[in-house]
Image (tube, rainbow, N blue to C red; front, side, top):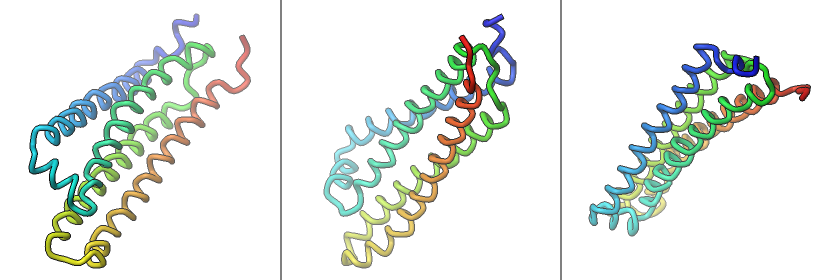
Length: 169
């Protein structure tokens, strides 16, 4: 009977969505890193213009919260129902988790890149107070979108804890 847990077609589809997102984010993230490595003008801009380093924070968050965390989500969603011999507590929460996480992550990455790009470009012609005024709204957006990522992780943890609640060997 333990092989039946987690075998629901919709549940397997959700797990595959997390894996697909993981693969897509890894390709984008690795390509981004290669581009910075092989394009000296881009690397110089990122390394030497104020706020341009934020572009690489977008890259780092894409890799960590995109390909790494999505892989972990998929693996844990696959393993936990089999360990506790129960179906996942809520398929709806798995769906919400997936979309809220992706929306929050993409919003964070875009906000980091816009802050870094606009801040870096503005620093060529403006003083730092003016540049900071340009960057600030985007960093607020990073925080707001990051809150969605946090919320999605709380949803994930809740769903897994409810699945394993009062587990008996």
